[in-house]
Amino acid sequence: MNALPKSEPDSRLEIIQLRSLQPGPRLIVTGAVHGNETAGTIAIRRMIEELRNKDLARGSVTFVPIVNVRAYNLGQRAVDANLNRDLREHAVAVTYEDHVANVICPLLREHDVLLDLHSFRRGDFPFVLVGPVNNTGEIEPFNRQAEEQALALALGLEHMVYGWLTANGAAAIGREAALGGAPANVSHGVGMTEYVRSQGGYALTVECGQHDNPNGPEVGYQMIAAALGHLGIIADAPARPRPRVTGIRIAAALLKQQEDETLAADFQNFDKLAAGDVITQTCAGPAQRAPADGYILFPAQHSSVGDKMAYFAEPSARFG
Ligand SMILES: [Zn+2]
Image (cartoon, rainbow, N blue to C red; front, side, top):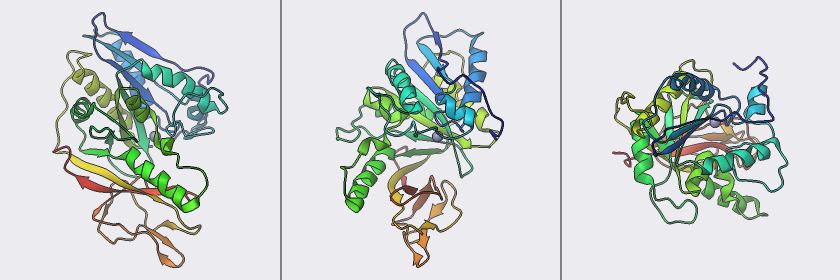
């Protein structure tokens, strides 16, 4: 996929907005924050076409089909930097992504709710990433758990995952302890959804499926329709079926600690682990093991020392 060069003009973002004459929630839907993740782009364009002939009941919806246009053209995740890490405005924009961030951050602030559509490298089924439970802590204070969780449940996906920023914050602090030097950059884990929550909104990431799964765009489309219906922005969206939810809490980021350390198996998202299972290995033998029964998430074989090789996640009863 994405072998053909694309030629979207990359000096601007396409932003399409429909506003009802009635006040209501302001939803923004984004695709291709990672340029090689095109399911959301296809889904968004399909929904834009469909909404041209439809009434909006209230509120507004804004679509950004391609956030990282240059990376999308190149068929790669990023140009200079991952937009979904340490997202903020830059007084001095250096990289291509800095310039995009300077447009996307103010745009996000104009909205109440973000639905950010992605796809992933390894695994089979789509899932939704949800924010933290309500809290007044320092890393990710939040008070919109009820609204965010209700929207997530309305999407009707079986797997619901949370704990991203907490695990990344702990990893940043652990990395600082291991490597010394600069103070931990906890905001490294701040992407699109974390940024929106930091500005008072709420937000979901949907991983629509494996990058090349032909069903990804359909999943993305169903997610947008479900969000529009749940928020009352369109009146006649059919409700999604509500499967039994598997709640999963990201418990820890596993950092690469040694040069020759590799993942111990050809892991896929949500592969089950038993306590003590070997997750990473070196030439000398097993390195990191599962601390408890759980799952592996976002396995990445190629990374340098101090980078994340995967996340360890645990079952959670949060979603009932
Ligand atoms: Zn992504």
